[in-house]
Length: 328
Ligand SMILES: [Zn+2]
Image 1 (spheres, rainbow, N blue to C red):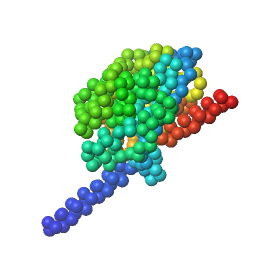
Image 2: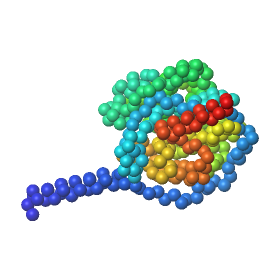
Image 3: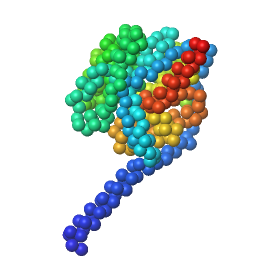
Image 4: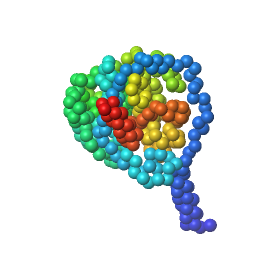
């Protein structure tokens, strides 16, 4: 065969492989989900009588729309799904605090020196209402916050901090140690700059297994706010249970699942995006499986990802209804 024919055949073969892997990347990729979820036999008790009244408000700072097939592997839908950039305000009798920080007013300035690729993929969003404006609207000042719990140290979860000068940040020790090995300085030191020299307290997870998760940290020591590790997206990502006297229990899961579909199926996002944002593939999948089992066993608990606009809106609507009913 002539050289030109060989080249044509080679090009055709490579092209076919490329098309096949592109198609494959959108196909479902089933997980084995039959491992025992209750692998931790001891578990902190749920002493419901101790749970206080706790107010929960999602503060959505920005959003971006992505096709569902990008956020949910195995979906063939091009329907736009909204990815939110939110903080959560929690008013507990013993402290007022945020879980994650949303976006500060100057976030676009912090992102100005980023690469074209970053600005047009992970760094693309529409600003809706920066964190400082949310606080103003609620007649609050940064000093009214006792601390901010950061689910993990990706830029989009620490971007509200410049609007909170001097407020104490609480971070999993494992997460901070990981961040010092490169994440703080990545993208022209973006995360280090966003952390803004705020004071920081590092948390250990020396508490017992909780709801099937291997260890825990009880924030107020009363069983109402319990942090659990959700590793894989980053090594020290932490989820937070909110156990309260009135209203449903809530489990905030950081970025362990972008959308509820990720843990209900369970499935990752599109593999290209998944590999861009996931530090340990196998661990992150195991965390999704753990969430899948927890959500199936506890349909009464609102399991909400920090980018899941639909779940956050549904929660806020139900919460408003509940509070209105209490007033009447
Ligand atoms: Zn995120």
